[in-house]
Length: 111
View 1: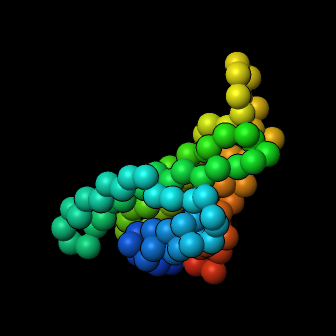
View 2: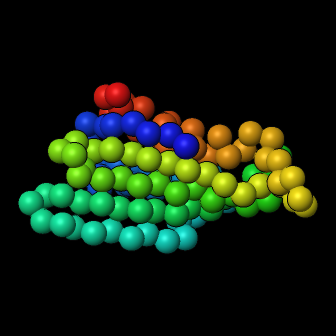
View 3: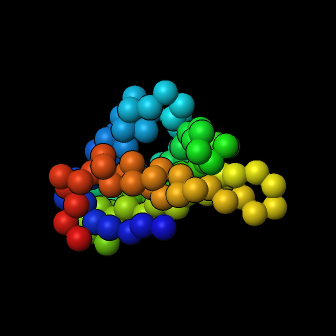
């Protein structure tokens, strides 16, 4: 899991993440998104992505929450899945999938 703040809006952040995950890889796709506009410019978006990682031997999911409920845009990520069988060891692929978000937003990270 990763938490950080960025200097752009939740919509802009999700757009950049979409480009990185979907357009930046052959197997990445967005499988769901929930967005709530709460008025006064306050927004919360939850996006779920999926990608096949060959080293994990399976598809992984990445959930991204982008909100500006605290007056600035907060990003939270969580990745899961990978491997086969009981242990489901992913050889670091879930961490790499979360790093995709950092790569997409690195110019805008403020803390």
